[in-house]
Image (cartoon, rainbow, N blue to C red; front, side):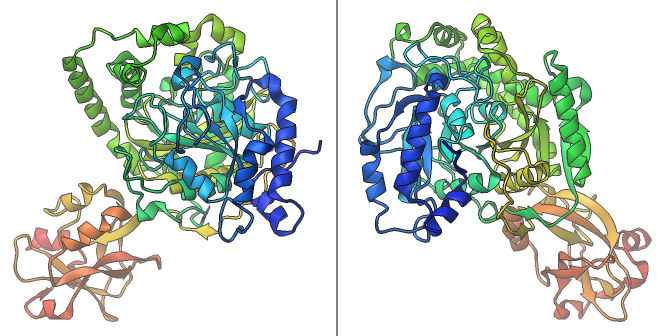
Length: 599
């Protein structure tokens, strides 16, 4: 059977051209699934008869009405679909929900068709994909059946990599939406916590859980994310998305960007020289694309990561499974749940304090760069190796992933190459919360420049359909007076996540005035054809905080557009003319600082 290009754009184009119908796509997908039964992808693969109601619902609809019209997808079997059993990888836990999880319903309403429920590490506890009972068995890697698929969202990743579905839902508490993506040559989006509802999702650690997205391209991940990221008031952990994280995905307009990597002595590839070489090549590739690399101290991230399984958060996994007989679980899951059983409330608070220190320590790094780059995993293993040493090797795979949700990061796994065995390698781009669209844009840059084949298929990477965009959730602000570094109002920038960019001057067309009143003393900048160059600082400020910054600016000042010497127009301080009535012209100093020193 000819391999069908399952990207959303390709299917939509075929639908619009009348070359395919949703029923043909679903029928063909189900037939292909039969070829891969030995991969142990599915806990339940639906029949064409079971899927007919979803097809019928599309009869009077179109792509214009439903952005995921006729797009097949897979659902990890710890996420509810109405009328179909949920197992979470444990047969004794099985129940059948009356309604679908909120995120699943959003996708179905947009025209997507669920092909089945996928295999997983039991109760989403693991990063290996082999912690599934004998009834379903370990999920095999899409490139080499002897190797692990990655977990816990194992079946969801392999289904996409083999072209059985266009995208899939996983969950990601500690890396389960990224490690399987890396091991199967996929895009793996771990969104900001709370953007995709977890209502109807079997919890692992409820306060940290995320629903994740596996896809073949960043375009597809963005399409699914835009549909799925709807605020759910019934989810106690839901968070409304920010405007700057909507419609902000695209091909980069700026040829330069900044990224950070761990110090060389903090990278750990667990003896895997090929993985180390692949990461070095990925870094060099980003630099060739205009990236400016910096090294950062990664210890605060690693400290946070250790808290997840070595601290009292294990208790949250026990809460999630408290109604289940431990003897019905796999032994490795029982062993994990049995750790930290003597932890007290005191220990939780102490761990929270330690975690808060880490959050403070990483804040500047998360704000200062367009993204931070790590390997998604430091190495990979065979199924036999993991079964022989299930705890230690699983822990190794979480080395670069376990801290993400504890530190409230958004992240995306991106394929970047292959090792000599033919297995894929990938990296993770991450940043602060609500950076999803920006990270998708940089991931798009990498995918489009590398042009790796899609998943485990012989299908070339298509051209991105994303438009050229600024793709930024920050804005450059020029300051010239009391907001300069060391001046009394500079805190209004820093407390809002402002990052200093550079010291420069305006175009040769401005006058500077010392305004009446205070404290604090403030200058007024006015455009004047007889003016001069005036010293300014450029700061990067999260767009989401710009409104509160503007609200704190006292008359006669405000924000407008200011011309920099190099010709750029940026947001900056301007002064209403009436404010100059009692002001002193200090243009000759060329700088507010120089004026203050000579006053």
